[in-house]
Image (cartoon, rainbow, N blue to C red; front, side):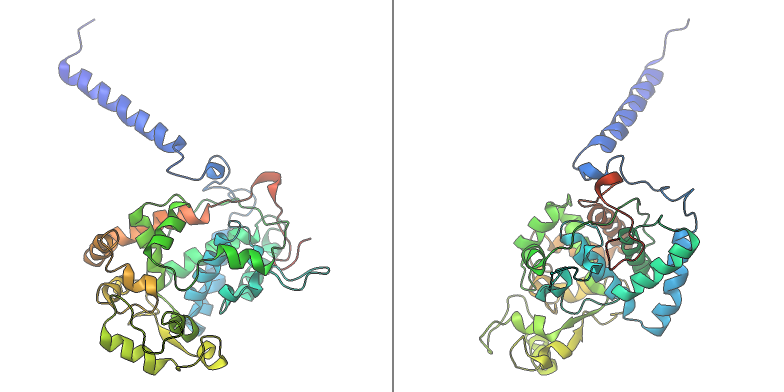
Length: 342
């Protein structure tokens, strides 16, 4: 047998390192949530409901044409569901028994829409493949399509979530959803607990590139002082916000009924949000601070310069958030109707 050359030995060693690296990635807790490993799958419905993604997409395409605000609503619906006890479709549940208020009644869930659309998609799926696709997976797939059909990336998401067996109170949502006044520290801490890097945390905030901000949340930024100013806010933009939003209590009906667009292309998933944030034209405190804080600004600038980098980081963050504290196996159920526990 001929002795191996140094080049061959180096190549073999390199292959071993690559294989070890891949193995480490698969078992590294920093890369994915513990209950994600071995629980969710990219081919979960391959045999039980192979057309699930096609059905979700076709159900949404016409809706997005009729109502261009739908994508932002579906993306926000997913975020708010996943932030409260994990991605388990609990946000869809109506009160049962003696319960008067549920998760959706939290003041922080003000403006949540399109829960009925998830129910309609679920009805179509029940016709195609009864009791197979969970409502929680429908929420994730709908949010994924919302991003893609708005011009963003088509994100590959693992599936196999089960639906919650519990109806959470509004107080649980009050305590677990971030306030509209959240700053960079709060935001980075929140997303770090979901396994995200700083870059991914900045990227997931890019979901604000579509949709609007209700004036009650804008006004809460200024507190009780009508003449208050906010750091890193363009003075002209502050004047615009005060003109666009009634100078009333943030809880007034007028403040709740009015809104301002998140950026100049509020129905397109792009990097305009970061342009506005860097320029101090963010509707919320986090929107302005993310463009100024030395920990986050470099990533905002990088995303403006390279949209593909933003799309890649957002996709990674989306998968991490949508895999947070999921129920699998016998931990949950597949509801036949999304707003009730069978």
